[in-house]
Image 1 (cartoon, rainbow, N blue to C red):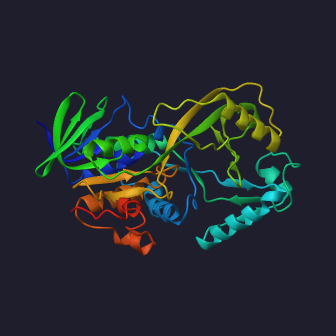
Image 2 (image 1 turned 180 degrees about the vertical axis):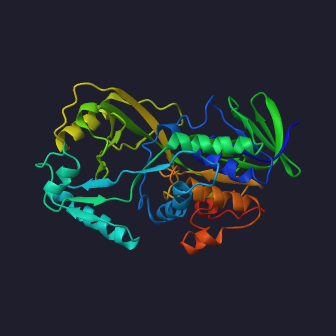
Length: 382
């Protein structure tokens, strides 16, 4: 029977980044139910690094991840992981209060935040409809980047393999039993053993926990729709990402295309998400109201999954019921941009080195990430 120190369930960005970190010192197997890791969430991301985003904890984790993303270790990748994009927040007259709140939040974390006139906003993105905007209803944040998600995810997997990690695809975990000090994992028509099991199952994290008899955490799995428009004739490559301040829509250049989303968060089940015609129609309608664009055809469309814990923070830490069962789930829409910090955090805890001081110094606490925060009546089992 193959024996490992750690079995990581799920090869999306969360599982791949942790497997990479742990494999420097541990025997790690990475188990993926699909033929390719990152099929449902990581590979269907809008691929932006935005801070602040998602609340104080996620903002701090993103801040801690930025040095790795801007200056990855030698040999990790030969291409830049981040490319400057900038974000243009737009607001109607009835949304000015929300824009002011965003501006205050940005100043609190030391970000540059430039208020634009209507003319200034249209200069940065010529297809914006000036009649949609109101004076003082646009602001530009230059410290936003496109993330090369494919390269980041691939580099983690390459690095993991180079460290002699074992990757098993088409290996859905169908059994988790604990005997003595070991977990026995049924996956890919075989059984393996590991001292620790990491639940990086994304939308399927609850299923993995149930197999292990771990604590029940009520995640919300949502769907996010993306529509692809051809934009070659628009010369859009230098445009910022344009986002409605209430996140009712956004669009951003992507090569010769324009990616458009209604920023939907409709609750769904863990499955291969498919875009609904209604959400596509909503995306086109909102873009037509805010811009001069009148799309005649859609070049592509997809939908991806995002998984949220009840309080919106990731779930990272030891399970309060099942011994040596570690949670790495609930990253929502921030899993890619926080993956360097979160994987280092999880690796440190699994290795027995505790919660990293560098994150505590930034104001990230173990309590705000631990699964025990969502199960206050259950005492942790060491």
